[in-house]
Image 1 (cartoon, rainbow, N blue to C red):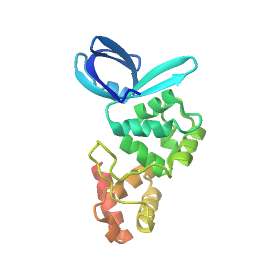
Image 2 (image 1 turned 135 degrees about the vertical axis):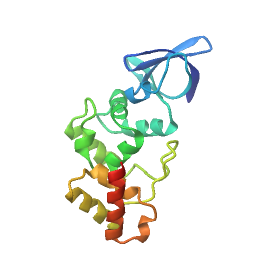
Image 3 (image 1 turned 90 degrees about the vertical axis):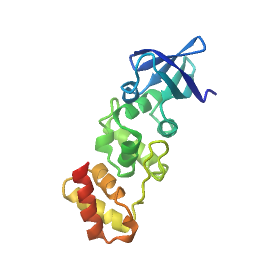
Length: 197
């Protein structure tokens, strides 16, 4: 219904931003991660999602379209409402969240406020096949490796060395031209990437 709102930040409080546009102030729920990027009196554009429930109508806001799309995916999971999705996006940037879901790292996901291990496992189970890491939108990061056999072996080797699934997945995925490498070479380059992270 409302795609985005451009306006002036007139207040920031309790997980919300008050955005003034043409004399109207909109209370918009926003992630803590985004709140830290806002300054009073700044002019911003916020992509919005309108949540309508029997007893509540709320606006949820995002600084990128990519974040909005990931939010929409999260709220399709039974048991994750808009506030739960905002809590997850407060804990992780969109790229990290994708890596967590794709690598099946329920332990990391459960660190988000209000998300237990069972809920984290459910999010991963329901979204793993629906999350795409190629061209992750407005972050400017383009991923180049799908988890095929060579990449899988490299990820498993890194996990065996003590790295988390998410760290291993990110490191392997950041190797350029990985699809043309054997596992050993890919593993060496991924280890370099981990040490640089």
